[in-house]
Length: 302
Image (tube, rainbow, N blue to C red; front, side):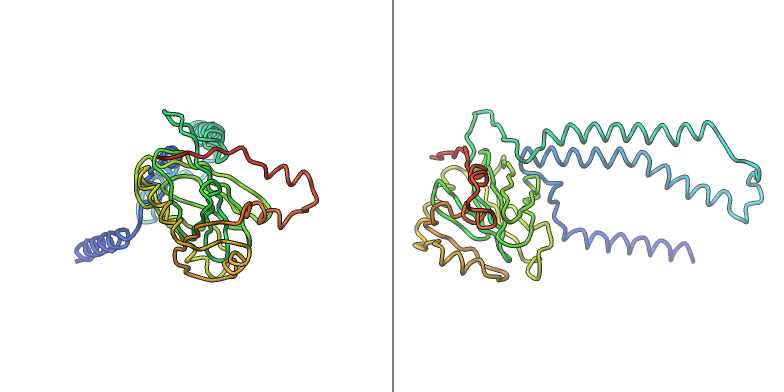
């Protein structure tokens, strides 16, 4: 009877788990770009290495608890046991080796997956630059070369490196497209950067990965990876919006609001991104101005 109840419980638990997990998205485990692939490999490698310690510990805990239970009169009893050189060697050597391997992986990938590191392609494509501004509670994307801007939607051509220059005009936030790779913090008065690339077309979820207030849970956007022709059509579509992002319209946009729809701006105030960053800095500082100078290139997709 007990066995039947136990089997029913296990089946029920399995079904419940399957139902719950069916609603989950793979995210970082379903990468669509080289950075995402390398990060997935790193995650899986690190987890497998740690399981070398975790699994034996769990198994031995269960085995020892069963073997040395109070009702087992055949269990060997050694009240004066205190030391085993063999056990000491194993429990120290194995974790030390794992830590050494993990440390080496961390050192290598910290440099190879540096978000500021430009990405290279086989055909030496120049990157497209997109300026990202975190607002309450929405994302503003500025295309400095195309002179357009969007809210809660960003598009770029497939197999072309994308250089995201990121800042915030509010509290600290985090810019993250899980299927493409690294997240990067967005901070007021600072410009950070993350270089990503999508090796196939598709629509990917983007999000804020850092709590930033009441509207945080709805601070999402869509990232569109498109063919070159689709990207050019999208650019033309935005330019037909006939809406200007000048200082007044930006000030209105920057006011706190939640669940904002996608919006297009056919023109943008020159150096808007720079002015947002400099607003939190000493405008008389030559050093601050020099830090904002960029040598970024933009791909002409035809």
